[in-house]
Length: 182
Image 1 (cartoon, rainbow, N blue to C red):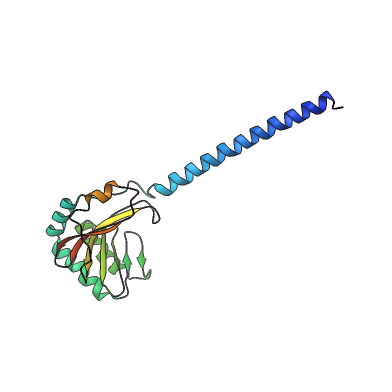
Image 2: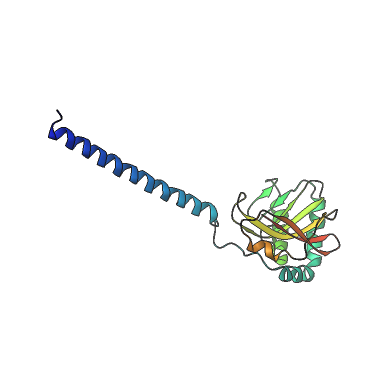
């Protein structure tokens, strides 16, 4: 025979366990949401929006000489693979060198800098970058030693389709292209 106190203790225990489980689920959901929000938000301030093709092409034509100068500097500095607004690879570049690059980034409108293969077959001038590496996107200008197999008439539609994985080019002139990557 179970005493009334025994059944009350079992009921209290069940209610406590149910409440604790609900609290764990609620807390877990909140943590997942906070982690997602942190991972998808920009680190400092607002992200630069991806600009439409026509705006980028007009900017390229206006600053073509500066883009050529940046390309020449990067080819000369053979060990540099990345110069960004706040870091470089290699990380021991002289201050004057990084200042020269960053000054030109402001002029040409590529605040996220440049990224290049060691053989310089592709040099990306990053105009905007959104999100994180695993779920983000970037666009800008590319100097390609060899034309890509496929080019697009427009990259504008890529900026609107967030879930679509993509790596695309649009020809500007000579070896110069717009690029979009997600």
